[in-house]
Image (cartoon, rainbow, N blue to C red; front, top):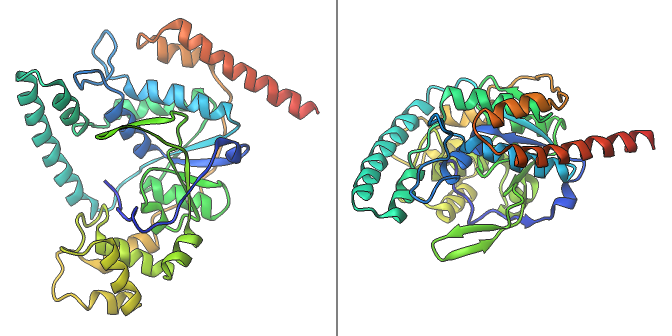
Length: 333
């Protein structure tokens, strides 16, 4: 779910040309959940091979990343490590929500309501160990750097941007701003359309700069963390009851320090100091970044082993070969 401050955050649409030769640290779990929940068939079931194994993640990773690489973007995928204990409660609530969605899906299935089947099935998306392992293998075979974070993936990705090992974090969530990421890019996809309730809308990559966010909201980074806790994070879903984004901003501006801000509430059902510390001093490490060579044999083994079309796979591999050739010519020049 992540932090919801979209209504008060300044952002700017950009084109892919502006990202050429830039390195993006991608929040891997955030991206994989997108693929697992959205790449589905008409009845809501994910893509599967003949053995019944889910392949939505492979389809998403393969086509999107080759498209991004073709735009001259370098990619680092950062995978989650051990989550903080506080996230356990959030995980329990998500599991409960998934159970309800599964029940609703079965009801819709009996009624042959395909629209509702698709809606509820998206809410049941799960990342298994097998999906994560396959994703890492495919990414490395594509020549993309894979990093295993000690803790939260988006915290590690934010750290990479802070120490200038990457240009921006690629994620749909705003949490990385609380982790101190100077730059966040959303909608990192070459797909120009997104389906909404009111119909398809055109989308573009969007850049959000932490410094501009703080200047626009007239707050500092610690106050932004407090604002996030008030509205709700992955560590305290829902935040403080009755406090929306704009009201939280007013409170933060008025009372300024974390202690004064949270002293305005008689009782809270979460430990704000513990959550504040998780954002202020997250569990991150200075990990080595390696960009492996493209491994066509491994790519074919993974993709065609899951019944993807050999012709389509070969067509995409040709794009990778062209990229390699361009890189050679650039080096020679």
